[in-house]
Image 1 (cartoon, helix red, strand yellow):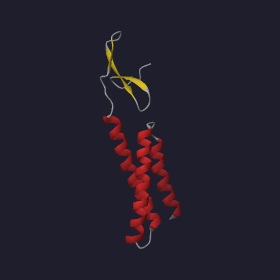
Image 2 (cartoon, rainbow, N blue to C red):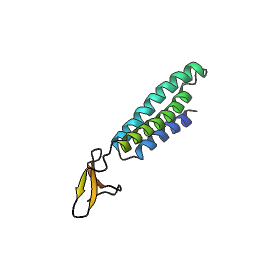
Image 3 (cartoon, rainbow, N blue to C red):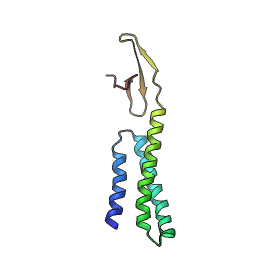
Image 4 (spheres, rainbow, N blue to C red):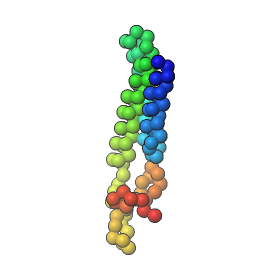
Length: 110
């Protein structure tokens, strides 16, 4: 039981590592932590003292929810028509979360 709980919590943090955006990573870790605490409390009180199992399930569910929230905030915070490049006739924007410029279609501008 302990090994499966550790594996579930580890899988949650691997999801966080898949993103290069620090906001998404932070939201995933916060969600996993809060989910683990809530799941541990619920597991202990509802499930006959199964604190570790509740914490593992809570960490996975909380991590997934945090990851979804982080991705949602990431995609809605980008202004896609900020600058115009007259040489190429294309629009590009600045992404403050990673400090790079991108073309309007999402390709990185060098």
